[in-house]
Length: 206
Ligand code: GRF
Image (tube, rainbow, N blue to C red; front, side, top):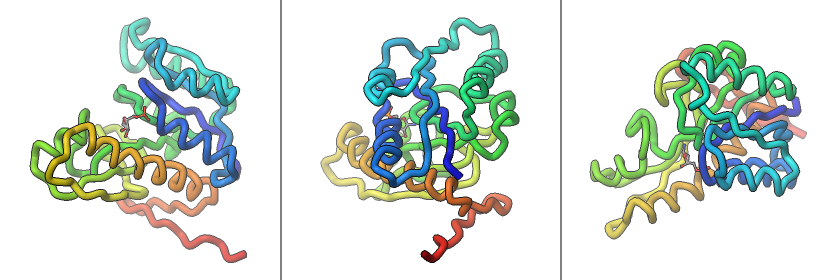
């Protein structure tokens, strides 16, 4: 089924770009219906405009609670026919108001190999901990912080002379592969959630 995506962002939007590129070159059976940023003026909004995708800024500061903010998000996403929500560098914790409206259809990309290093700055956490392997995780979102069922992970080495920036860049390369791939599996109906485990069914033979 072609996915109707709503992509939520707060920053540069390089993961948004990976999704837009995968849609336009046929690797991902999806259309980005709207990009929503909680911060004005971020580069992700320009990326959306360049791809002729509607982009809106919905500042969390205008709302009294996380639930009220998520209610406005749900309204904006539903109004545009979104069926799947992608958190692509969205620096907000989402509540059951969003999760219940898009049950089983909210996906996050996190720059660490969960369950290690959840929350902010996963790359710095891995480096400072002394991990030798780092990476990224694409997972379904649940009510916890980076705790939902894992769809896919990609690993990279931590090198002796890494800084947070060099490690961040190496992980981002893998993020840009992992997120469109996971979304395509969802589009193909190949993801089966069994408790905490997500089974990726084989691709249908052609
Ligand atoms: C990525 O590292 C993502 O994993 C994390 O925030 C960063 C967003 O980068 N959640 P970008 O805005 O997609 O370039």
